[in-house]
Length: 280
Ligand SMILES: [Zn+2]
Image (cartoon, rainbow, N blue to C red; front, top):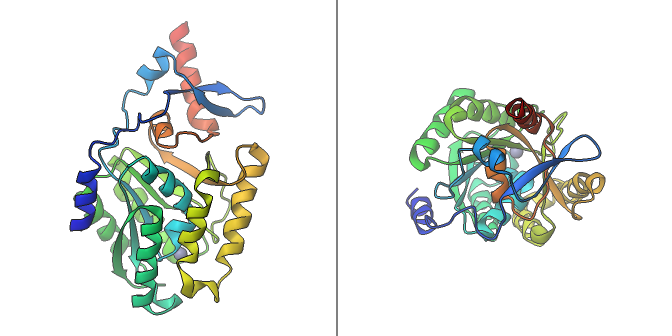
């Protein structure tokens, strides 16, 4: 905990404005909306709750490799901008190997991404909703995060599902909540697509760091496949990560994801309606 706090304080000067223009939205030909540079005054007023970058981004994972698999690229993008990122691994990962070894691998993986790591002691395979709620509550109370990332709630693994439900309950008052994708996610349709081409090697290395998992799972195949799958239909970079926005200030978040591209049909549709109403 202490290390996480120190890192957060060290990066307290960081702002999300670094090196990125204020974005604006414009309709895309496919009916979705893509992020481009520049914003109208009205759009700035509408999104009046900026992400200030002084509070950390927390990535919750049920198991030691979850955060790197689902959001390793985004984590690397944010830490390259000196934003404080903390990975919280809820269980020991004991069903997948020696927990001491897995914790060491997780720590190395987080270091490659430039993130801090907090390791929980919940039971792998038996992550209870209430246990997860207590863990998430304590982390939010300790670090007061601006952005939270969590596993997607529709998942065939019970630990991922319960962690997602716990975060959804506890993080209601956290300004921004995004779900990330994993190998066992079901019916995952991203609303935010982030180009991670520039940090691809970093993400790859962070997954390879979970060396004990390489022989028993096919994590590298999934990582390679899904990164291309999310990129190809959108022509935005060669590697992408997909996220679903549960709630938050997307325009402000966009500054975190600078030099990336987005497609957010429902949320920005609301912005357009509000502006049309103002115009009349
Ligand atoms: Zn997992």
